[in-house]
Every structure is written in structure tokens, then in C-alpha cells.
Image (cartoon, rainbow, N blue to C red):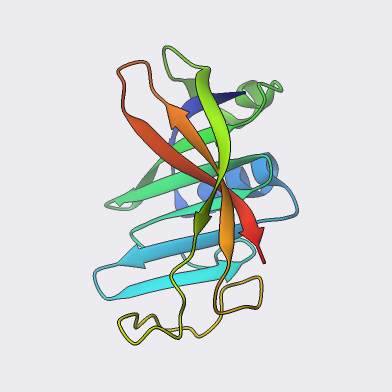
Length: 149
């Protein structure tokens, strides 16, 4: 299994359009700023300082830089979307990846204090499908793909 990686930069509306076009219908997102962590289904209406949108086909991670956003786009296929979306390929891509599951922290645990009591799949516990992606330099990142009950 491989994951293709691109860099993107633009404004908030461009980021919303990018997520809609590369991830399509089934999208979840998580975001954080200094005071909040949010996890929801769909495309964000307003973007927090850092976060990621993800779906079965890939992930878009963003970070706010003033009025602009920088994004890392990770997709399971090189389907020609890069030319249409204005994405810059990251050298060395595609990167090897393995599918796995990551357990979610049970929200009923008293040590957890998020501003929500259920994950977007409707349960206070569960797991997410993820890709463990290995960069050629050796570091590994987890790229989320969807909730599992």
C-alpha cells in the first residue's frame, strides 16, 4: 500500500473547496486552537488553527499562517487530482503505508474532558481506521481514514 503526498497553500474558501474536491462525500474533521478541540462530521464551516479532514480516500491536514493556510494532502491514489487542485507534489512520494486501527479514548473516562460526549460516528468509544505512513527519512505519521464502531 502507498500514499501520495502534496503541499497546498491558500485561503479558507480554497481549503474548503480542496477538502470537498479531494475527499468527496464521506468526510470527518478534527480541529484545535489554543482553547478548543472539536471533532465533527462534514466539512468545517470555520477552520480552527490546526486540524485535519479525513475520509476513506485520504486526509488533508492544515495549519493557519496568518490569513493563509498551509496543508499536507495525503491520498491513497495518484488520480490526477493534483493538476486540478494546484497541489505541489512532495519529493519522494508515494510513501509506503500499512492499514491499521487506532483506539479512541473512551469519552466516559473522567480524565477526558472534550467539549463533546460522542464521536461523529455516534458512540462515546470505538476506533478509527488509519494508515501508518513512512516518510523516506524514517519518520512515521498516522493518517486517519474513518471511524469504526
